[in-house]
Amino acid sequence: MDLDAYVDAHRGEWWRLQELAKKRRLDAWEADELLDLYQRTATHLSLIRSTAPDPTVTQYLSTILAKARSRAMGGRASSWTAVSRFFVETFPAMLYRSRRWWLWTMALSYLFAFAVAWWVASHPGVVSAMIPADQLDALVNHDFENYYHEHAAADFAGKVWTNNAWVAAVCLAGGVLGLPVIYMLFQNMLNLGVIGGIMADHDRSSLFFGMILPHGLLELTAVFVAAGAGLRLFWSWVEPGNRTRSGNFAHEARSSMSLALGLIVVLFVTGVIEGFVTPSGLPTWARISIGVIAEIAFFVYVYTLGRSAARRGVTGDVEDADQGAYLPARG
Figure 1 (cartoon, rainbow, N blue to C red):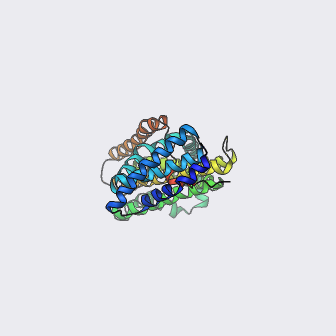
Figure 2 (cartoon, one colour; figure 1 turned 90 degrees about the vertical axis):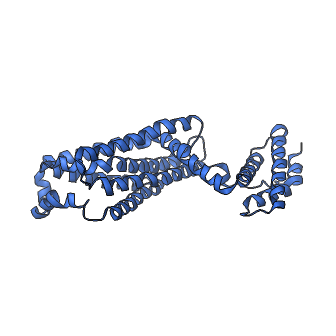
């Protein structure tokens, strides 16, 4: 079969199907035309695959058919299906596939924070020389705890959610260069380690962990996921593997957007916990238990749904239909 001649012969039908698939409203005649063109194009695709397989033409027709099928099924139903599929397959698959990056980021970051905390607690004179005694006393006895009580729970949860989403976004966007991700992690873990060391030196470790752990476990995990994805994005163009640099970078960038969308929901959960659970009157053990349960639930989510989806070949990248497709032109 002469593929170029076949493309020329049916180009108009494919363009018309693509046009109908993009329309928001279809009348009865257009709906019938869409179904008829869908069946014809499916036949064309089958014939090309069997007699003159061409990756470009095959992807183009597959994309048109996917859009037409989605349009024929109905926008609202397919939208809810897409949302469900994202949280059941796409997001957990990307979390699982990138787990080595964010788990190593988590381990090294915690190691650094604990080292800083140990050093600060072992050298109290250094902190005392940098921070006036009255400010240090206020931090230990009032400011640290009051931070979680000084705002209304709903307002505080919204503020925390926005701030954490910003940190995650910077980590993802900074992945293009790599160093901004490391700097962001360094700042956050240094602050955590310094405050933890100060509280430990003043025998306030129980207060520190009682206020940090309920929300901090899942919150920091989300930040580590974003940072790991950012570093993986950086490495995608440093060491592209079998792909071209631009192709590998584009693939990882699209996959990172899947993580970004999912992390918005994860950080919303941490914001709710920090706004309503951390400053609540619940016993310390109960508040920490809620944080631990949330963290365990996240890891179960990753290692059950994520591993299952990854084994089925879900990559976390967007669908072919959303990557854009263009009708091949004759050379």
